[in-house]
Image (cartoon, helix red, strand yellow):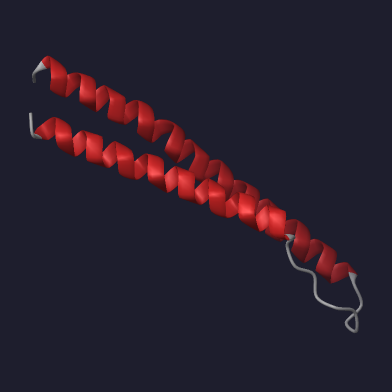
Length: 85
């Protein structure tokens, strides 16, 4: 393997790892928020309105997913480019 290809693969790995970590943390935060919401909903009376996640929480989850998938996509492209060298 040539040195430029090795450097590109290393760069792809350095981009992919934080992206995968961000996706994992975002999913974990989303699951915890939904569990907390379900617990709060069980304590409420039936005639009270339903509880939903606030807009800021949903936006932060979407942003985490977008950035995480963008990092993984960029890493895939960089890794693919390294095979073309």
